[in-house]
Image 1 (cartoon, helix red, strand yellow):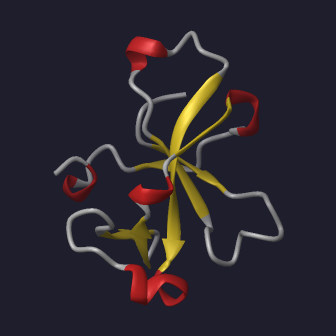
Image 2 (cartoon, one colour; image 1 turned 180 degrees about the vertical axis):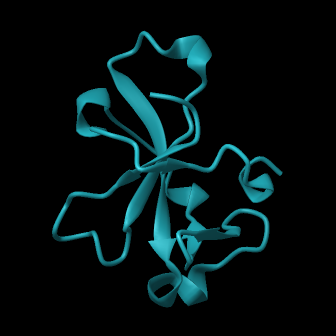
Image 3 (cartoon, rainbow, N blue to C red; image 1 turned 60 degrees about the horizontal axis):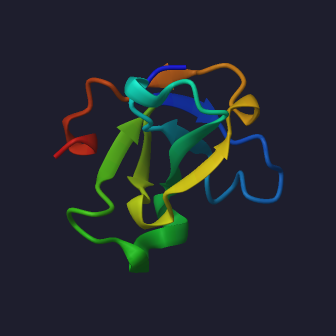
Length: 95
């Protein structure tokens, strides 16, 4: 697991609104059994909740998504199976 890796949201109930989850946890605390994540939300579900700097638009795999920082959470590391990509080079995630 690496910081800014992207994982598919495998929850059938929430996948439509939150197709992906981004691991934002620093490698300095990698020994924990949990990971700090932020969901990437489908912009059509969250247009009214968009905040310029707190929920930046992210273009990932041709989809326009929102990084939903207010929904930051901790999840068991075992929930994050195999990364499908990374946002390591996306400027909006760190500014």
